[in-house]
Image (cartoon, rainbow, N blue to C red; front, top):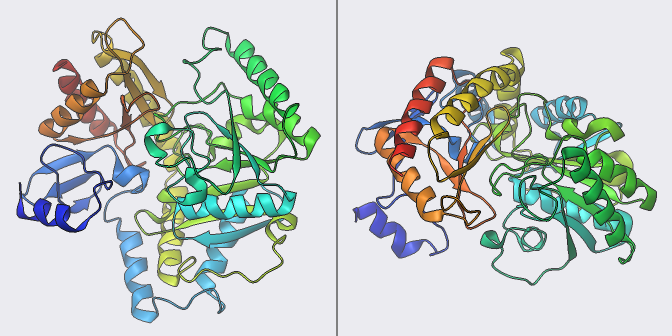
Length: 426
């Protein structure tokens, strides 16, 4: 055990888990690569849990942060804040939500917590619909709407939550249906559920479930849900903490794959917009955002220094068409991974879109989760010089691949070869 690991265990809670048998200390990074304390280089295919979205040590972002730090680091939302207003204007325009207002937080958990506050206040209801296998954060309220057992340490909650089918296409009672039949069955389930449920505030859903293992429904499912929700006045919250900013390649926001019935009422974001700086936020149309009848501020949300980082990062992402790069390079990468996994009996499915790819591992010939295999591949990939993640609703048996959106073709090929070697160890 390294001295730093021993010190970590002595002062950090046991439930703050670490990857790897010999935990890794990352000291610095550049582009799509990071270095550990021993000087070894790794190709980073996880980006600090989809947070280093653009690149490590992106000069445009580090310059913006340094310049802002030289002026003022903090002031709070009690004062006018030019970088906050400028970033809010850009996000409001990109959100697709009419008459949008933006409230900044410091994390995706806090963003979803604020969205729940808005929805329950606006609708005067504490009833929430959430998706099975979902993850929305680690606060008391967001744990209460998380449908993934591995991330739900308590059943206590200030909310009344009911879970809806549809977030996982290839498991569950409707898996054998066609995409059209799957959507129809999930809508029928939702309609039946609402027939037995008192007034509901909102449905919260990730367009692609992140911690759940990059699972998703057929395109258009949430549009079909939205038509039912609208009949009851129920709000739709799209959790874009992991899917936002073009990561899926096909769309800038995940909800746009389900946009036939219009944009969500509330959109939450975080992670990638700050490229490592602590930014989260909520977008909602004015009548919903302004429904609170008491004072509220954010001490650190909208900090000048994080807003400067967000502005620089968003500008770089748009100017360099990183969404298009995620589509092109992600398409190549998933095909390389599918080819590498084709001869591995433990691989149940390779799924995803853009640079958001999951590899689900099971006991060969069954649907039983295989977390030991996932852990083994994670270790083998590290030995090969590749950092990846893991997750999944069935006992953490899905490998998660989510490199920075500036990934090159050569790096995609390199990472796929490393992953092929790691899978071969099974």
